[in-house]
Every structure is written in structure tokens, then in C-alpha cells.
Image 1 (cartoon, one colour):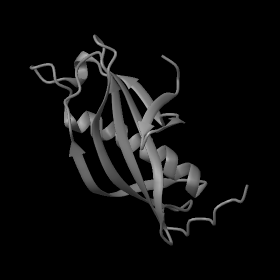
Image 2 (cartoon, one colour):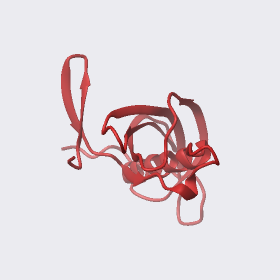
Image 3 (cartoon, one colour):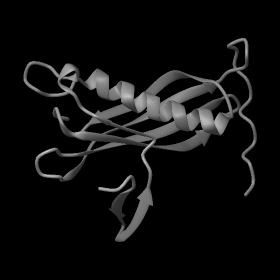
Image 4 (tube, one colour):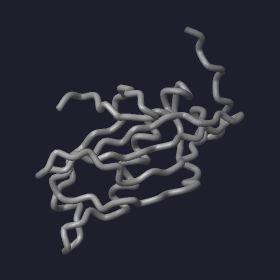
Length: 138
């Protein structure tokens, strides 16, 4: 497997890199062997925070999780990849859609397990909200 996941979308394929990639470990699971939803949500928040921080060109803090849907369980040994994309820029806030896909340890199958919307606020050096800078032009 490469660092890039190839996903089919609308008949076309696109390559994208995960913001976070990690392995689901036994310490992250409940007694039944399923990974705790809170652990998965934390990985997604990290991924969204990375993308929001890059867009804000600085410090950000999570202020809300607008929506979270768990589609499938995550198991010990699954390779967990969180993909994050900025979907909205406010004056001081950045909304990021995060999708998590796992590569099943035994079958190698790629499965979309969860998705959510995370809202971050850009912060200044004193921890107060600051305006999100204008997008850089290519």
C-alpha cells in the first residue's frame, strides 16, 4: 500500500493524502475488540486541526463538532487514515470535513468508517480569536 489512497468518486479516481494515519491498537479497544468512538474522534480532531492550522497559518482550537456519523466499527489492527478538507472559512473560524477510512488488517479492504464536521477558531498569541488570513494565491 502506498501513502496515497485512491478512491473512486463519480466514476473518476482521485488521489489524496491522509492528514493522519495510525494503527488501531489493543489499548484503544473495548473488551469486545472494537475501537472506542472517542479514540477515533480524537484522531479525526487531530487531522482537522492540522488542516485548519495550515490554512490559518497558526494556532487553532476546536470549538465545535457539528456532526459525527459512525458507519462501521474499527477493529484492533486496522490501519486508520483520516482525510480532512476545509469546507468553510468564516472571519475567525474554519470548518473542516473529516472522513476516516480504514484498511482492514485481515482482508486489506478499504472501508469508510466515519465522517464528521469540526469547527476551529484561529487564535493569536494570547489565545484570543483572530481573523483567518486570506487564501494565498498560487
